[in-house]
Amino acid sequence: MTIIAILWIMLAALSVAGVAYQCASAIAVWRTLGTPAAAALDPAPAVTLLKPLYGLEPQLAENLGGFVAQDYAGAQQIVFGVSDADDAALAAVTTLKAVHPGVDIATIVDDERHGSNAKVSNLVNMIGAAKHDVLVVTDSDIAVSTDYLTRVVAALALPGVGAVTCLYHGRGDAGDWSRLAAQGISYGFLPSVVMGLRLGLAEPCMGSTIALTRETLDAIGGFAAFADILADDHAIGVAVRVPGLHVAVPAFTVAHGCVEASLSALIAHETRWNVTIRRLDPWGYLGHGLVNPLPFALAAAAIHPTAWPLIAATVVARSAVAVAVDRITRTRPGPYWWLPARDILTFGLFIAGFLVQSVNWRGSRLRVARDGSITDKANADA
Image (cartoon, rainbow, N blue to C red; front, side, top):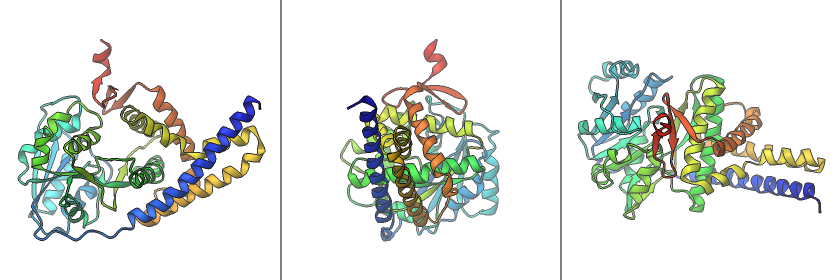
């Protein structure tokens, strides 16, 4: 058997395996995200929402407004934090306070730096203003439904749960490139996490939501313990699990607002994700890349035309995933005919994740170590 024949068989096998995986993930999305919500707690505990901010993102005011408008039975406080008094995000907070004068809102402006991770540094400065013992941290680009807090707090109260995180789908907020980025989240990232959960291979903890008690936060060293880690959400989840607690993932999604206004912005953002994931979970990262069937089907067909039916099979399987996600989340981030281009781009950035040694984040070039810790590249090279 020639080397070309062996290569063709390998590519065809990867294509078939990828198609099977995509079909299974479409089914997993239906079965996982269609689960009814847990009953609300009575009485509902008081909650402090912590929202670190950086810049005036598209739809920031609307995203923040969704957290103010929660249908939650307990007391709520929202703490917003920025490191710069001139941060444009403060305009959205000012508007929110004016529209909702009765809501308990605190704003922290503090430029003291605690490590390399700017978001975690912000949280360190904010935590002193939190009034309540149940804490919910969410990124600024997250949008939620009115029952979000009720569902998260109910999950946190389950036996053995130390923290709660949330799955998320993509939403394009800054034009077509951001919609393409949103497709990557909805049709690539989300189904893969759902499959990982169902197979017992994934233990996510994501910036979309990290809910935990003040007691648990203190036990893992507070936010300051994660000030030099890029994937702080992942590290918090690992720390919570050390004493045997569980990070719960309720059966619903929140929206992640994608703001990539150009191809270069999309590449920079997703490359940072890929490098971080590869450093933290190299085998999982490799597996995620190998279940993207279209590039392998195209390569197999380029070697021998008998593989062309595999391309049709990959398109059908990927479309099934997209339809399942969109119907469950009641969204549609972009046209389905973009999917082949999105999958080719995903594979190219998957390869780039092996080649890139440092990432660009908020204007700084950072090296990512295998434990997720980060150092400024300029200082590291000096």
